[in-house]
Image (tube, rainbow, N blue to C red; front, side, top):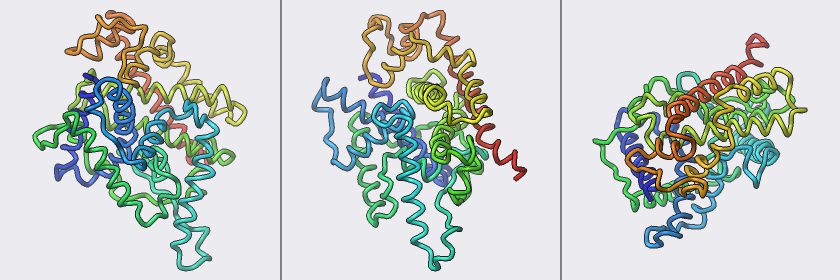
Length: 368
């Protein structure tokens, strides 16, 4: 319950910050980035509440519930047991990309312009990709065909209201005196307008090159989450680095990114070019990556993910006044807490730097 309420309070501060006039210009871009984390809080929170206090649980509309399930599982990336790596690639290559392309082609007045139709929007912070219209569709749990539905906007607004009701019941408050990480950001660093491109041109110029556009699309999803936790929800923001929700967002994301890269290397190594494998190896072989993927760290991941203390941890060791630190101490050892915080930050830094470089290499190599 402490973790559930901590996340709800965080969401209240976050939404309060977005209401400030100085932050409204980039609120939609942050919403694309935060959507899957809000879904995680609701999905796992409702599962726990129904077993603890049914009066606090909220019934969701079937549409909102389905969207939340898809969005929450999107954070598993390639480790999603229902989709797997092939399923994520198919979601982009066979569903999202064609649906968006067909929609924008359909808007053209002259059919001869079809090869030039721009069907993907890129969102950046400080010139780094934090989301795309394709990534947002996947991360928010939207169905690929939603883009062509006339009532899509109304549906999303309805679901957003249900999200808000959930967090409000658990203590989230809209109060403009509250501050959160959006207050630390530079509005000018966000894309001032959507960078519209042709996905058929964009994806082959990224990551693993023109032989795997669907994989490249999936890797752009990982890159956006990495840049979000590195440059947007960063430790130097108004949320302390050891605060529960900030650490949770950053740790769970980097954990799943590194796990996903490990799966990619082990399962589909034959699809990777030598330079791609070299980048992945650089990330996976870094001492900080090895540290956070150790077997004895798994109970911490499970505890943060599911709002329930892993059975391998001692409940008496948990102190809600120093929540994250005590959870790490219960998982590892009090003497290892500072080093573990440093390892998480180091792993995020190395992975973000490596993937941003990998993302741009094909374009740079071709002299464009």
